[in-house]
Each structure stands twice: as C-alpha cells, then as structure tokens.
Length: 413
Image (cartoon, rainbow, N blue to C red; front, side):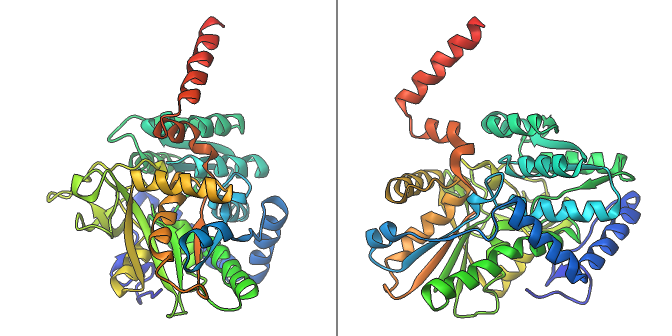
C-alpha cells in the first residue's frame, strides 16, 4: 500500500477530518502509536499476549472435501474464527489495549455492528481493568442479541443507537460524540481500518499478524504461494490483515467480497467498490468511497451480515482498488446462505455470515484453477453468533418450535 507525503493518506484517500476539540487527543494518539510502532519490544509483547491469551498462530486448514467437490484449486481456510472471542477482532483490540495502558487512559469506548468487535473490546477491558461502553445500532442489537448478552456480562455498558438507520454507521457517530465529551480519560477503540488517521494504519498494523502467519503457513504446507486470497469486506480489517501478507507478491490475486444484499440492482446492499453506487466523499473523519446520494447524504444499506452493513470502506482498500491491486466482488444474501450450508456439510466448519461472503466467490472460482494451485479464504469469524439469523434464513421448523417453547417458558416465569 502506498502512502503519500501527506500523513494519513493512501493515494487520494484517508486523512483526518476531525473537530478542533479533538486535535490534541489525536496528536497524543499519533505520538503514542508512532512510539509503539518503532519499539520492537512492543510488537513482541503483543505477539506474546496473542499467543497466550488468544489462539495465535491460528491454523491454516486444508479444506480437502471442498477441494474435491469443486475439482480445481486446493482450498485453504485461515481460521480466525478460532481466536478468543471468535473472530479476528481480538487482534486489533488487544493491541489497542496495550496502547491504552501506555497512554494511561482508564476507559474505552467502541462501536460494533456484528457484535464481535464489541465482545472483543469488552473482553480486553475486563482483562486490563478499563471501564467500557459499547455503541451498537438498535437493529444490530436485536439481530445479535447473544453478543449483547456477553458484552454486558463482561461488564460493558451497551448503548442501543436509535438514530438514522440504527446500524453501524450510526453507532460510529455516537461513539465519536462520546469521545468528544470524555477525551481526557477515554480511548476510542476503532474496530476497523476506517476513520481518521491514525486509525486505518493502526488497525491494519495489528491485523497484519494474520497475513504474516498465512504466508508462512501456506509456504510450509503447500510449498508455494497461493494463486488467490479471498476476504470479506465491511470496513476491511480482516481483509487488510490477510492481504498484507501478500501485497508485494504480484502473482497473488487479492479479492475482497462485499455485501450484495438483495442484489446490486435492488439498491439494497452494502457494496461500495463492487458496484457503481458509491462515490468519493468525506464522512466520519476520513475520505473514501461512500454509498451516498447526489447531495452527499448517506444511503441506507442492507446485508444479512451485520458486520458488512456499512456505508464506507477503508481508505487503504480504496487506494488498492484504484491501483487495481485488489479486485472487488459482491455476494448476495441468498448466495451467502448457500455457501454457508455447503461449508458446514462438507467440512464441519461454521463460518460467520460475514466470512461466508468470501466463501461465495472462492467457490465460484476454485474450479477454474488447477489442482496444483491453492487459494486461501480468510474465515474472519465463527457463525455461532449468527444462530438466530441463520436459523431464520434456513426457515428451520425445529428451531422455530424451540423458540416458541422458550417464549412460553419465559412468559410463565
């Protein structure tokens, strides 16, 4: 990824469009991050923490059954679902937790869509002894209730956001409002490679551990680099994590898969770079491609996966897209459910709905490659968090009966 002379820009994208009141806070954050990044001992402390508290290095699983099923490339799955808290989000939040300790802050706040970042942040806060508040769109609170339960049990205050579309973009807005009012003792744990500088660089750095491991593992297990690497893209943190391991290998094609929702033509989607519906804009502190109307008002988005239901995309990914280094595709809700079903039945692995978007296009293209070639799918999270959404989408009668019975029991209590 390229960085222009102007700090925080990737090509024409990025920057730090922040209110004057946050200037000193960002100056302090930039200085602290630069100091940590230059300190080899900090990275060693981070890797040690992730190896003892999470599950690093996460495995690279050869999906032999799926490989045979499609009859083409050997399919490998990078198992970020096996991280503590069930997703790649732990990589970023534990790194930022170490940074917060060095900065002497005592409270953390975060936004979350799918809830995995919220659970990871609440977990980090519990471990390090920080007060914690999580902002979550009211719609996402309803469809990710299990994650809300765990956030609260971990000691976090979960604030449902009722403004706007009541999803991720609105949660980010509320988190920034909180930060402005409490910046002296509070750090905002941004969950993805978006927002004002230095957040994209910071989150990408902590998530790069995925790509570092994946590159080493594929060379060890397969003996050569993969032909293609796939990752789902909401804000883009899991994608940037694995892509960084292969950015300099021009022979490796990088594919980001966005939320096609009910279809691009329906306008009910969250595909920014894989559609013609996004345009350059500045919002939430940075410049990137946003789903917005001709007046610059942000559009409503839709995805079966709460974590991909976002109006913008990482400025780093916008630059890589503009350079032609990363190809972007989209997957519809229906395609996602089919890929999820196949993966469960073929491999006994349950991807999160977000991750299943990457599986869709890997499955479409695996058969076009030779058997002596490999592809890697980044499984950013596990699907147990999506049990209510998945069961509803599969229209499972036994699940419906279970829910009705439980509802009767709770009503009786």
